[in-house]
Length: 310
Image (tube, rainbow, N blue to C red; front, side):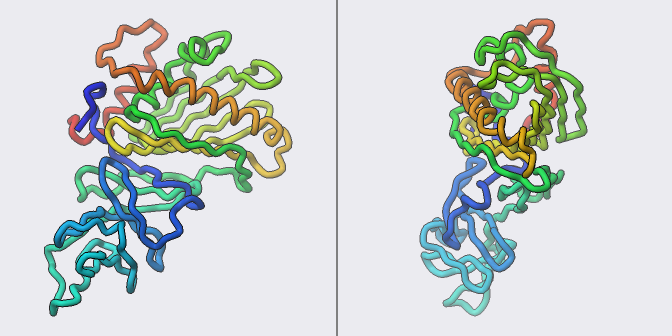
């Protein structure tokens, strides 16, 4: 159910469950995403994600479950379920229960994140793909996570709210949203942007690529080039976890020099925005200045990710 501050349900799309190198080492682990209790497990083919509640008598399989013969086994009565969620075995019955099924979620690994596809209708297969967009030989220069009490759309709207970069982040002037390209769930914006660095304020170029509500790939060109993988995963309709990871190409000495400082600037700006996000509400009919048309365009694009909004 949507929070009183926001009219949005949980959106659908590809969402990060974590960077691959940070996933639990255990074969079975509980997690929460999309407003659901989930279980993360590994078989010989990789990571699997399913609803956590056993359809038998409701045990949470993420606590005490185990993996046997590429199936996840409930700790309560040892019913096992295969990678598609079907009941594979009941140890004290002659055959499985055909009606007993766990909902499973498609997964993929891209840009060093484990992604899961969520749609409120479990029969809807993934509607788009996420490209691999890291530099050919990526060197990580920033990693930060934040859990924020807000809706994903509020965060994403900041990318086109250019005036706040002056009032909140201290930029000397307001930049303009540049070239816009939209193709269904894909959205690309290329524009100039001012950045604060230890050497002062610099004019740079930014290419922001949104692949649905959950994954953004942002390329910054400022003396050198750095790439930011930005993921936003709804824990509930009004609570998200944001993961930022920044990379530069190995051997790009200029990008290496500016990477740490630029990463600190990205972190500074995000932390300045959080108190505003956590204490504001969505204005459905905002009173906008003439230059703020991109906000309306963004909201039109964002609406497609709510299955219940028609």
